[in-house]
Length: 313
Image: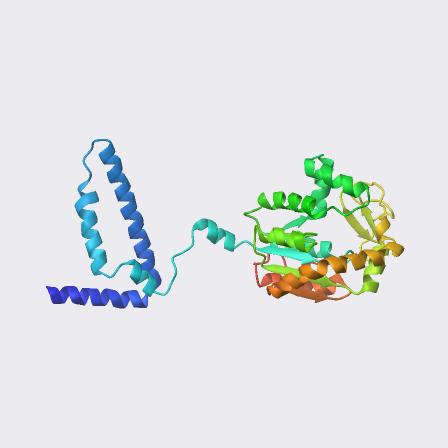
């Protein structure tokens, strides 16, 4: 009898070593059944009903059988596999968190739109959220409006407050940030709520940026951007969708472009260095968005399954 039991234990140990994941799964299911049985027993006792025989004697017998088969926490650790994560953490680990950095006129808005459509990510533009909040007269929108009307940049504490609120509402979505973080303070605030998987920076020659910005016209209410060279409106000076007039921003005019680009470089440098040191930064250089796009598409394809071919553009 003793010899047969020892042989049974030896066979169980061999199976456990060969198929550790199956044994762990079986153990988890067994433990779930035991917990459910104990809960039923406790409920019966509270109501004055006798506990079921299965919940008493059978439970002890099953524990003894599992012990003889080698089931234990030590066996789980010996299998070399950690216990599976809880569902919430497992879901979070599958969500893609990405950022695109680039100076004004680099084409990051166009790249973001293509990534969003090709991979199903939410394109989260800080400029878009600012316009929405200003139109809705929210508290943060009113704060931002005061700076914008004076021709000043929206300060870190205002834009960070805005973006943290928007990201909180999108915890269960893949997303791609555009226009945030711009500064090291904003990057550190973002660190507190998530860990980025990808950061892309677009390196475009100064002359190309200057030409693009001087040819750029926008529709202020929506933020739609047109370029007279490669993305002109159907009717010169008119928004394609609303029929409203387009304007050229003061800081897009040639005399203001150089100062604007120098300012971006000074502010963005520590942000770029931060993400480079973490190994998540990917730099793409060129003068045409259509030539940069295939490389961006390939990078994202290694992280998430595309829903649209890159040849769509």
